[in-house]
Image 1: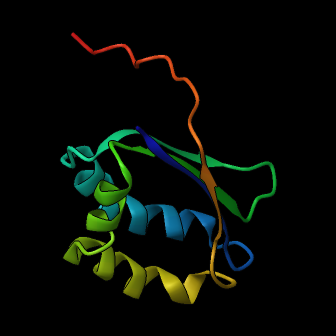
Image 2: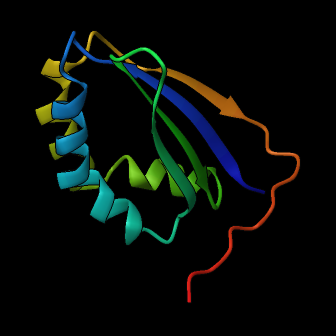
Length: 104
């Protein structure tokens, strides 16, 4: 059964673009190469200091394994000074999903 999370980060005022650059440096390549992620959406909220992420993992174990990656630790070390605090994390009980289209 899939394991999904909806995460909202609040950045310090005007720091959203800096956070995105750090995410692109550390997380984008790590997530793209991670078989445990079945879907990932990195998005901006309507508030100029909000970042939202919708993540779908193969299962809860894959989510836990991802948090132990050294790339994740490096990301946290660099990004935490630019955030107002811990993110709001909602665990979702996936009932149904449409598979993503595969790129040719």
